Length: 267
Figure (cartoon, rainbow, N blue to C red):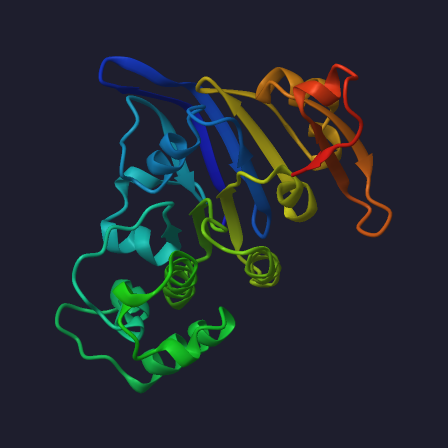
């Protein structure tokens, strides 16, 4: 699934939030969207998964105008895991994951044994199969996030759009989830907060600041001390990790950067 966004502009409350933004995600890539808080990451993703219609620009999936697809057609191609999920009805975990099968059904069509198998496999892949009959509302934030990712897997879309997919997860679950995304053989666009995780897992990155894409490229091309200083406002050293072969960023506090204290802070 190829995704292309061209010249996207979005205005919210009479304020321009995105300015002529463009990006491309090629089939099978895991592409990260990074930037400081308030830079426009979530707004861009919401435009792509059709919560916020852009004022201008075009988004296409394999050449088809996204906003000309029906909701069901779009949902068969694209699954979404949002940063926040306000769920007030007390569904079981299994029922939440089964919702991922809705785009593949006609109105009032009953669940099948194949639907059940797909959902059980999705729960197994995120390590939540033992929670199938638990109340979703009783789960921790990290457990809820894993269930929502299982729902997206059950949707069997060729494109996954994720807004902070590792939100609320401990480090072990973060690594498991990103390892899983790399093995799915689908196209993934994810907003990520942790720059070292982005460096380790992403094929390419887009850096957004104040509603504009300022640069893009591989982690090796993007992550420089100058870029981190200009975009995130912090001093950092960037080195190639001896075991992963990927860039690793060592952030420095203001005291460290000024030379008054030795050491570094890891992302």
